[in-house]
Amino acid sequence: MSSQNKDSASSTGSSQEQQKPPQIEPIRLPTVEEMRGQDIWNNCAVRSVVSGVMGGGLGLFMGLFLGALDNPLMQEEMTGRQMFIYQAKQMGRRSWSSCKAFALMGLVFSAAECVVEKARAKHDTTNTVVAGCVTGGTISARGGPKAACAGCAGFAAFSVLIEKFLDRHA
Image 1 (cartoon, rainbow, N blue to C red):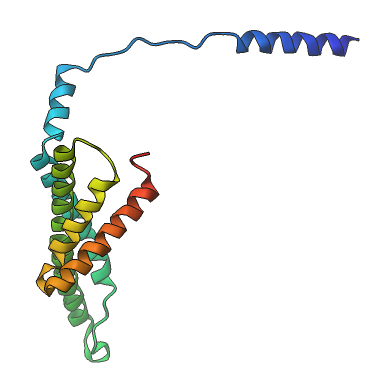
Image 2 (image 1 turned 120 degrees about the horizontal axis):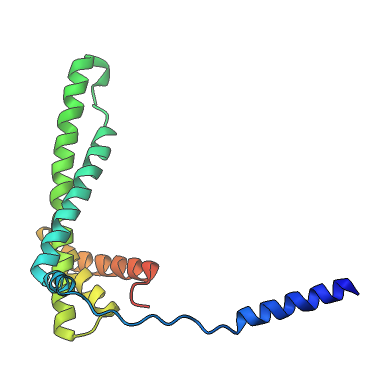
């Protein structure tokens, strides 16, 4: 009998907890500094430059990592110092090359997406497709029109896959 009283007392206590209305917090307006910061970040030039710098930093570190993995062809004939110098030069070349490529990629993609988003006044996947196409076409334009078209299609598809994976516009 006492176990039934305990069960009924615990169920009464939990029902009272469930009936509490949720706390409603008042809406807080953004401060002047927050509004200025948002206005600065909504500028396409600022957004593009920041993306280019961050892409360059990523490329720099990727180049350092991948450059360290390169092995010299005549490894048996090189002394330890020669191998060290070769590795350092190779890492520097690879880092600078990756830095430029990723900086260009970040700058062009961010600029294209921002401009398309402002022109359409919508924030959806179409902006990503167009920005991916522009970026892929720009990066592969040196290879001619066929390469530019393939780069456009490939980078647009990759951008959509990443967009769906991250699910930004859900």
